[in-house]
Length: 167
Image (cartoon, rainbow, N blue to C red; front, side, top):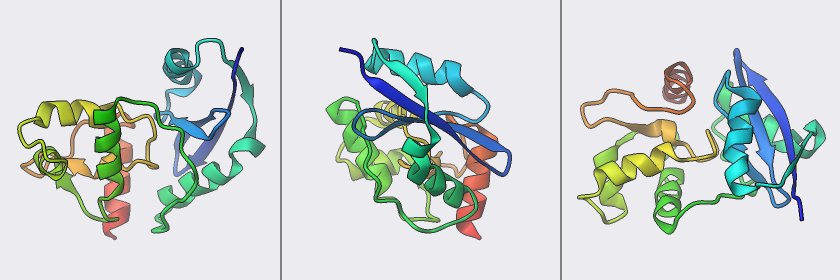
């Protein structure tokens, strides 16, 4: 039985992100400038027989949330998410959601928070596998030396988000 995957774009400050909703809820936010190819590659793993339908109405609330965050809103979203990943990845993604707005932590601090201080590389891999840009705020993770690095959404978006949150 095929799933119907709804998708639409959210755009603010020249950042255009594709939003994807499964039958349950939001399951993917694409990188700026990557569009439909990246989205289809990601969804093919989780929803191999899915039908893709462009449907802004189905994603309107998520679109508003993304556009508000890009504009500097401090309001956290309580919209439902459909996050598929390993237990370890989900523990990392939960810890990311607990990083306060405007604050950053290092990968090693994140590893300590989940009780696995020796697993910094595995933590970094799980951070990078996050399918939900902004909704799971992994732009708040930086290197121990303070450098902002490694972000699927691109460094321009990461710097924008960090600057916006610190203003």
